[in-house]
Length: 437
Ligand code: URA
Image (cartoon, rainbow, N blue to C red; front, side, top):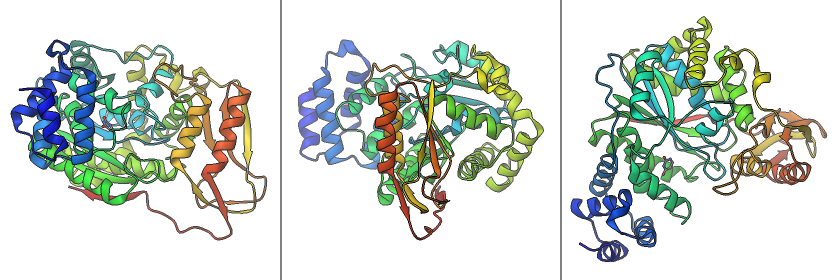
């Protein structure tokens, strides 16, 4: 079998056999296979343009999942559940959900990623807490799950190595937006976690991978169907990503948001709704609630009891950071400067483009402009106003946090291009758009 023939076959719209897919996955996971990156990248582009059917997508997912090792969590009696988001702006919900679900009696092995483009990454947010270690081997992850029921870690060489290679090639070759490639990437990593159930948060709107609702729905259906083929119970919840989620965008800032929620402050209503919907489904699929609604109510009680915050403290300590951060947010890295962005005119906030706010955060240093950029953990935005808020001219719409005056000037100007103020109150847009089962 030759890689060149496989590329040509897909370029012409052909269908791959399981053996051909296994060949590509081996090429991506084993440098000794001798297939150069440019051939893998050509194949990715051919898949992106020509697509893959359900059978090919399941075969690719299975082969990528089996390209490395898997956690073995059979010895742990509690159900193992996880949540995966396709990526957004201000979406630090994993920081809350992981300890919250552990406090509710589930086991949460949560493999997470770094920021990608304009979207934030869970690992970067966790590392805003000084000393938080996410590079862990399988024995250590398993032991921590047995001890405290939660572990948040990065992808290692051992887990789904084919995805590591393909993901970085996709990021650098404009081949991210392909449903079969996204499905295989997400599910191969989740399969390696030895889960009983998975809740998928598929973002929809300007800040999402797929802006178009039809494509986001197609992705949700493909994810749920393929997960089922792999024996994994799952649902996909389509959630709004037209404006940033919650009030904070940035790494330290999103830890603050997480701690506020864990303390029972639900004033960031869209964030809380998203949290309880996803968490409710995790409880239901994990067998801890008869319905997602009952699951959500139980989770609210766990937060109000203080058990979720205590699980967060334990998790932070287990990963090597200072658990006092839960009680003293001053321990988080802070930006050197802050300034306000005033409303350019009176009216209602009609639009606050999530993608542009995410890009403005990257300008501030909250995300990486390229692979080697250093992060400024304190940088980002606090959103004083969100879509639907009424403002007078000059009212503070957002607070900018940064450490470099010229970057702050540029980010402020860019933020203003994300903002539309209009005379009429906009129609409220639901946060939860659809559940695909
Ligand atoms: N998240 C992933 O893990 N993979 C993708 O391809 C897109 C989002």
